[in-house]
Image 1 (cartoon, rainbow, N blue to C red):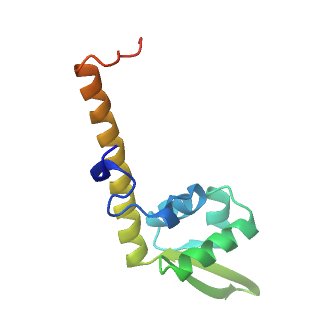
Image 2 (image 1 turned 120 degrees about the vertical axis):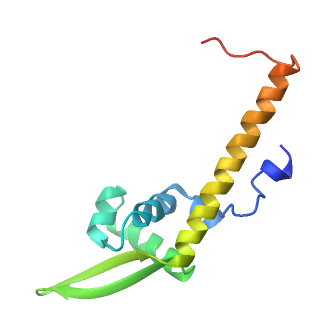
Length: 120
């Protein structure tokens, strides 16, 4: 596949591409801020997995972590940074471009008669 539609496309982000990190960023993109436990449950992750993901995304500048207390219980809230929002949008755009380029290339092959269309 040509570079223009390949994974080298600007915006494709290997850090974000991991399914669990992508799920966390996508979930946070719909929130102003979310409790750690809510993110863990909605993304179907363990505490330790989400902790590691959060640390990685925080070090990249994509997630902010705020700690506090509710009554006597310690709480952690996560939010997407502006940089994280931009990186996620760019990554999703790059994935769309890869899919569109692949679909277009396949259509050209079909049009050229190099292979057939699957039975419906």
